Length: 296
Image (tube, rainbow, N blue to C red; front, side, top):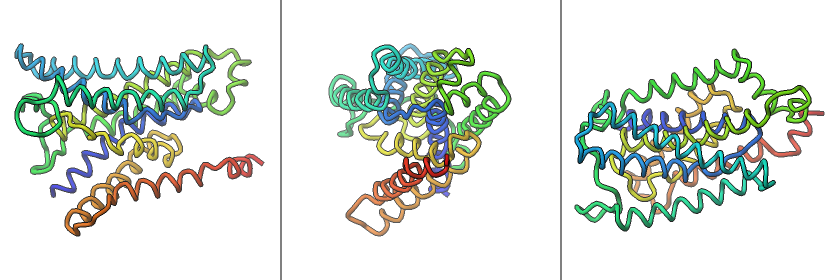
């Protein structure tokens, strides 16, 4: 029961971050800052809720405000990367990767320094108060109502791309940016919106992981989440509705492989091995030769 609930909890994180990655992929941008943004969202959420605890802020307002700040921070970072791409001709893939590579050691230093908990030996921020934690709906697992929010968000994004004019224009831009430009679409609005939504959802995924699973921001909690979310978006072919089942499948593989490794006392990280195999399969699936063949 615990591992089943944990699997669904992790799948909710994949859904949120995967939906953000899918939004970016719709415009032809591959975001490699996923892990850094998830780490940033989790860190900001942890320290903000710890701060709000000192002033005894109501749980609803504290969580809402913390999540808003996290989403805004993630959105601004990816919008800046898109700005560098648009006006400075910097490669989006490279700038997002460098951004993540800069965020992770910076937060590691902050957690091991001024924001480290004064109790215990764990490299982590102080635990958030129980009143700020998402209530479990399947004890003893950490499964909570956030899973319904994640599913609903994916469904809303699917309707956005299929039913709204801006969503359809985003789809068209991803297929042919030049056609979109000559058709009079506001291409800057499309790409900057996609970057902002992608960054915001990755940061929200990190904040949700803190409030729903870990209850503290410890170093390396983000490990694998960003890459798996990108894998989910690619396997789902950037379809938000397909992100839901793919997230559950990937989460099942990761959760139960970790369980098997724990009880089998394996000496290597099975999750990283599975993640490598999945990424390899996606690389083959999205190979340039295959795309040229399909286009022909």
